Image (cartoon, rainbow, N blue to C red):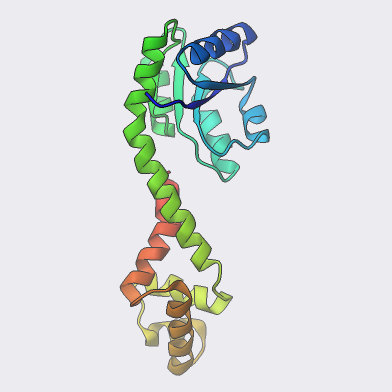
Length: 204
């Protein structure tokens, strides 16, 4: 198994220390935090979050929400001293990749990381595509972005002209400039970029 960076979020310092030692024994690098707030304050760019779903400061849904608000995405594995079906469902709906008892041995920890790896790869790919699409769209003027938004909704040039209060010819000029800046071959390609910039980001 490849070496991972584990961001351990737990309000209990003894459990944090135990998990850090376990991570090191498993061949990983460990960073520890006492709360979701402390985690996002350090703005980690990569790695996997292992959070104890047992206190308001570290519950899985709250950690995922805090990461999302910070504009980042990190895979999250939740853990608890005792598994509870309601807590598991809540964490998984929030976006946790796995939920496990607090590991006491190396094997369960590595098994959880291995199980999460395929989904992490998929979400990383989505994140990269979304970031690339957003970067391209950020080059557009307000008018060009408005054209793109309407285009993605299926509006025709005449529809756009009516909504925007401009001539069809002006819409065509904005549309051509928008396609050029996005590097899009056609309107379908531009609409795909709009989807990737918004919907893929939400899926991450």
